[in-house]
Length: 393
Ligand SMILES: O=C(O)CCC(=O)C(=O)O
Image (cartoon, rainbow, N blue to C red; front, side, top):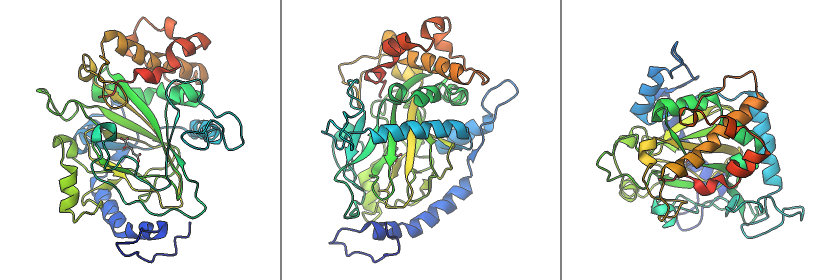
């Protein structure tokens, strides 16, 4: 993409990618200044008895997010990138295609839930629609992609634990699971996962939203009731391609996003937001009630974010399905056990691959370790199609 053409389009004509990129300049400067004021980022730190350091927890609960630096080692990032590259090379050529760019049968036909979700380049496929419980009420700017851009581009990849050996191992990472326990309690439970693929000059926007959809009116509502999402970053996240968050909004209840944008003269550049800039191997934690979103990636840098979340058990037990899950589903003990068993197999897959690393002991599966050793048998029984049992709220 040519980023030197910064001519600004008139409101009537669609924005070029270059003009879109240029239109973010002042917002990016303000966001960086906001971010430097907060400074809630740093390495994972523990107390002597291996509890996540209380200063980190305090910062997370105050602002609703935290950036952990240098969590995933370079070698593991390389393995994740290799697996993602295979998935991208073997992706169907479009949402309804069955072959990849080389004419081979596309990856994913073994799984019930589609592996790939496509979007038009630089579009905002969810904004202003009723998709995903209508939680993205406004639409981000959709700049015009380069004339040689494909009609559709991979927007999301689902099921990282079944489609990427490195993805399953990542799911059992001891630091990440320790953080999940510190935030949601030792009996925490999984939510879902999705890989956001924001290719340079092509990646779509994710309009401003809060993730949670079920517990806003709950009697016991509080700032942690909808859990959080990790994002493991495989590439550098710049203010132009990264996720933006609005600090502290996880405490405000359900926000009227349409009103907020209207009060900002209709501009999606909401004041006060912070860009979650990262280097490869950094991991962000974002509360699912925090207002967040990302702009179309009109920059020259690709972002790939492995996104997976965890909940408090009490938020999920007895709840009914939402988002990707049908409202007829009830999250009972058995359902939670089956979905949580993915964590058990992931911990063992990681231990087999990295025997020198600390192995996380997941309290809800204590005593089940032998039946959850990573093997062909547990892949077929626990991992394959595990995402049909996601615990979305
Ligand atoms: O990474 C992005 O751009 C969007 C992520 C997001 O909206 C989410 O994790 O809920």
